[in-house]
Length: 248
Length: 309
Ligand SMILES: Cc1cc2nc3c(=O)[nH]c(=O)nc-3n(C[C@H](O)[C@H](O)[C@H](O)COP(=O)(O)OP(=O)(O)OC[C@H]3O[C@@H](n4cnc5c(N)ncnc54)[C@H](O)[C@@H]3O)c2cc1C
Ligand SMILES: Nc1ncnc2c1ncn2[C@@H]1O[C@H](COP(=O)(O)O)[C@@H](O)[C@H]1O
Image (cartoon, rainbow over all chains, first blue to last red; front, side):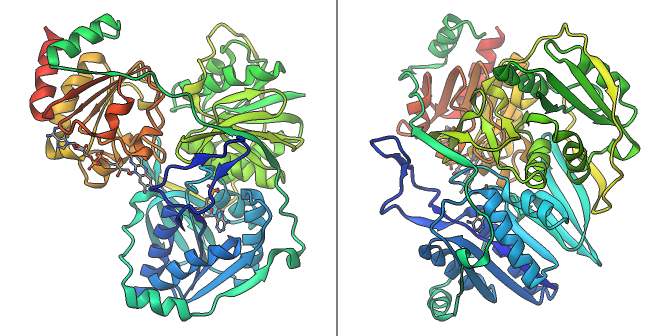
């Protein structure tokens, strides 16, 4: 069974992004980029399936600028077999990404496709569901446990107020939640080895797929800052302040 | 042209977040239609028809909608959606699963988690864990949108819309519902509670013992950081943050919480934030209206006792 994972190269989760002075966009020049944390979880799950003998091949794909290769190297160091970069300078949005991923799905015919539940830069959370729709397969969003049973996959999902379990016919799309697994620590020799592995590069423009953005960003801004607060000396003062604020 | 809202319910009542979506839809000043899915759900459809400013309820009642699957609900919305200008819902786990699927099938883009709407097609939405607000304009003929419920007041009752039955497409057969495990609690829903008492990983095994009585004092809900959930001290469905539930209560207690960006993303719009932390330099204090530097294991019981007097 082949497993395909989609990884996005994003601003590292430890970094607080800055708005450009002209408010046109977020300034990411020189900012540290890393694999989207949810996609690292996706890679880990796929590699574990391979280690357990359930998957035979794991392919990682990313869509973006040349530097997105770094996230593919990260995936290779974690143990994926093959890496594909679909290269483009076009501003990417989930519908376009889903269309390009569908192209890879048709070419590779994976039984399972794992994406993150959301990219931590745009915080949209759309691509997996869009890909499932375009590929006409079932979707298991926000997965915290997956279990392959014959020609089905059972997915435990983190939903509002608890969890549920759905069974999907394979092939299917799964999107990862934080508690699906804890990604392994990458050892330096593995990272060095991953640097030497080949990455297949495809130019998005050669595929004839419409990935033009549907949303136009008009401006970005910092959120309104909160009024500075105060420190209280003890519990009695805290209670007094809450009483004055009329929230008791 | 009208607006179609995917209603959500718990099997008995329409969710508060759906009423908030109805209020958000007011931005367009167009007729609002609610689609209600369910099995034997006539009472719920009737309740939906009583929300003020709803013009029509489309009721899709079918056995396979008892536990509606994203694939099947998306197929229903696509069948209905071509006639609408906007397909809207609150940014809940259910709608987050369904609406992107609908958008892709209609070949349109989607706006997730809008906090403000300027008709006909401009939206403000948080990006980068709420560190930045992005204003976007959609160029699609059908707008597919989820809204952040806490940014909109709920539509009131008092309407009397027509209820029309619509037929549900047959089940796709791509997926099957097996079971669900929902936390039963007499506390209010986290996303709409007036008071939220949240704790971090430092509470450890005493999470419930210390926080429950304080939450109980306010009739409030419990929340937690990812670290507390990952460590198994709190259930996953009460995680507050960028990747958990977004809350904006009148009063938020952050107890033993450092104030990581990802946690702040889920609570910084709360009206009043109280932080209790023994580290005077914890980042949470920069966002708190009232900060108390103290050992939480002493301060929380003392606070609960003082409030109950
Ligand atoms: C992709 C991604 C998504 C994430 N999403 C979320 C999310 O949605 N929600 C979320 O919360 N986190 C999220 N996180 C995790 C986040 O970055 C932090 O790690 C987490 O919020 C920290 O939780 P904490 O405050 O409980 O723990 P810590 O950061 O360890 O802080 C513990 C705090 O407790 C204080 N403390 C300890 N003992 C006491 C005591 N006796 N009395 C008083 N104070 C005490 C300490 O001073 C410290 O400030 C995410 C991370 C990533 C990478
Ligand atoms: N440019 C991209 N390349 C590869 N995968 C992507 C890309 N953008 C999004 N994805 C995948 O889709 C998931 C959800 O992204 P989003 O819908 O943007 O929040 C991510 O976690 C990735 O798995």
